[in-house]
Length: 132
Image 1 (tube, rainbow, N blue to C red):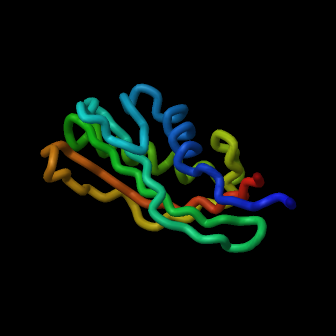
Image 2 (cartoon, one colour; image 1 turned 45 degrees about the vertical axis):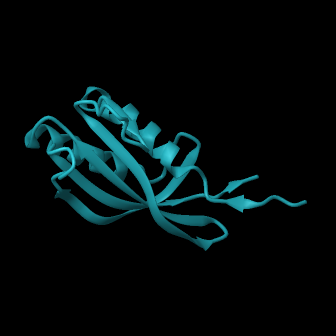
Image 3 (cartoon, rainbow, N blue to C red; image 1 turned 90 degrees about the vertical axis):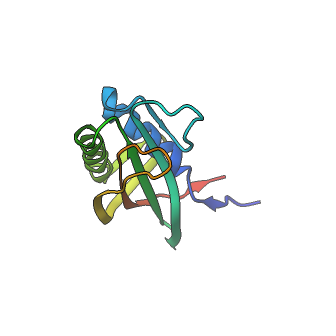
């Protein structure tokens, strides 16, 4: 059987990228919010994508940030957005990011379930497919 091209694990790559860049700005970076939410949390979700060609998958990632107050949460989200935007021509975990395309800027999106400040944004990472 020949090699099969698949979309790489972009969520894991983004988590690694943001954990390394955010340092103490976030207590947890994950794909799920735990039952007991930490004071400063970043959630990463793969929210779409498509195969552009044999060399590029276009993946859409939404990042949500919760924090203790609006200034701290805004800083976490703006820093996360900057980190995501800086990934072009870099390797995040095992994923090579060819290009970064912003979908929208950082938005104040209060969380009605937790009453905590929440900011979010969405970007597209154009990535090299993985082979299996």
